[in-house]
Image (cartoon, rainbow, N blue to C red):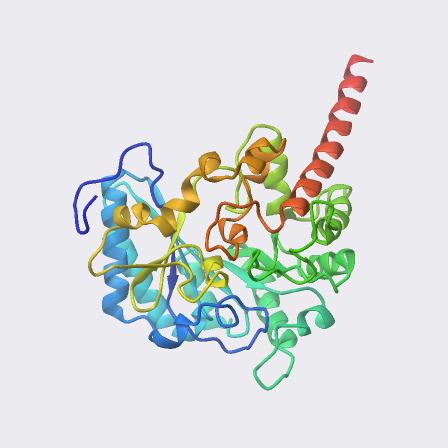
Amino acid sequence: MRKGSTESLDDAVAPVRELVVKLHERCNIACDHCYMYEAADQGWRRRPTRMADETVDRAAFRLGEHARRHRLGSVRVVFHGGEPLLAGPATIERAMLSFRAALPPGSRVSFAVQTNGILLDERFLDLFRRFDVGVGVSLDGDRAANDRHRRYATGRSSYTSTVAGIQALRSARNRRIYRGLLCTVDLRNDPVRTFEALLDHEPPRIDFLLPHGNWAHPPPGLDPEVGDDRPTPYADWLISVFDRWYDARPPETGIRMFESIMSLLLGGTSRTEVLGLAAPAAVVVESDGTFEGSDALKTTGPAGGSTGLSVFADSLDDVLRHPVVAGARRGLAGLDAQCRRCPVVDVCGGGLYAHRYAPDGTFTHPSVYSGDLRRLIEHIQGRLTADLRASAARVSG
């Protein structure tokens, strides 16, 4: 499809259902594991600190245009950063009104924000209640675990300020907008202690994020030079958490990664782009209006997930045809022969697209986490199979 065309995608191509909008591209803390500022792609230095109102309106127009072409009943906008709350409540409210106004009749937009929680106060909470904005907070565990990475630029701990924001979300009036916690896995942190520290904040759901790395820039604890028998430290860490979580009665919280694996094993769908063969639903809009693929692609090289397309000249249909985005949406056809032969490929899905990147500049490789993912999936499969057999035996007995 030529640039600027009004022709829509083939019906077989999954449309965009989520826009990640970088309202503010700077942050009030300096996490040393941040893929935004510490990765190979340093494009944030050249982009505006805050997204201009005109850019927001064009992003809203593009999402509305896409929803109209593909008759989408619902779409989602996630305000991200940097730290999106640095944009201020007035800017966020204006952005939400713009997206609402741009949607065609019959289409509904929902909103979410991912924040470090430090700036959460009654101004933001009142706004988020009024617009039913789902709020996720990034926290890596207890104070010691969180302080490994999530500090202010001066080196001061951000833990107390983040916990204050979470406590505000836990109150009766804000509970319905509290969506959960995002924790980046650090192998140095005890897995069960980390999980239980997160449970102390009563999250409705926890997302465990594998550190974004690949074969060219390996994550901590993984040596790309070791062969197929290399250790699986991330699986070991996550299995400890899974067993603690799975054995709790009644369930204490949801964990998206584990729930998605269980769903896929039972023939259902995934709720995360990290797993499964379904096409990713999200596209990123940077503060200057440029479209990018997954944020995780910032770890692959200086160009990261750059497409060269923007809200001012290009439609979301154009974005979906760009190789940076289309490559991640090829499903089984986009995996190498080794992955396609794997018995858990329908669940693993080859892992996150960015995690397959290698020094040869291609993504036609297994995930750098392939061994860990397979071991984790097979462990969960074993637990589920044993429980289903025991349940069947009780029924037949």
